[in-house]
Amino acid sequence: MNNIFDRTTCDSYIARIGRLTVDTRPQWGKMNSAQMLAHVCKPYEMVCDPNYSATHKRPNGIVRFLLKRFLKPIVVGPKPYAKNSRTAPEFIVADERVLETERKRLFGYMGQVQAWGATHFEGKDNHSFGVMTAPEWNNLFAKHLEHHLQQFGV
Image (cartoon, rainbow, N blue to C red; front, side):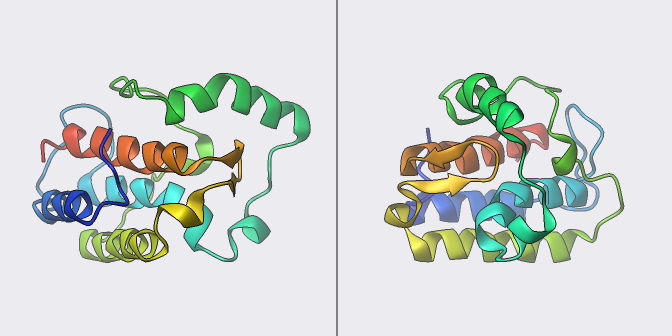
């Protein structure tokens, strides 16, 4: 798994994201490139947006247990996501977005994660999965980015 906390890896992602245009089409799925970047920002919003918890209801105890038990291993584990796999309803981006706006927003989030470093994420609470390790946070960010960059062929 790529290390999102590594500057060289992050720069590689930034270069690939920079190759996206409004004309870049997905190899699968329904999102356009701007919607995909907005979608990829969603996990970053959980940790970078100080108002996230106030604006997003936390799953109740039973749902959170089920998410942690059954979904978390898929989301943060080493196995790549399947093409056309379902996403959480709150991560769906159906409205039109501006590519450059979403690209800048994602770069800002990536920069914030870089500035914080891996130690910031050790033992950090995830809105849906509870406390996670830095490697689990890395996998969440890196695996999600990789999946969607491959989706758009960059």
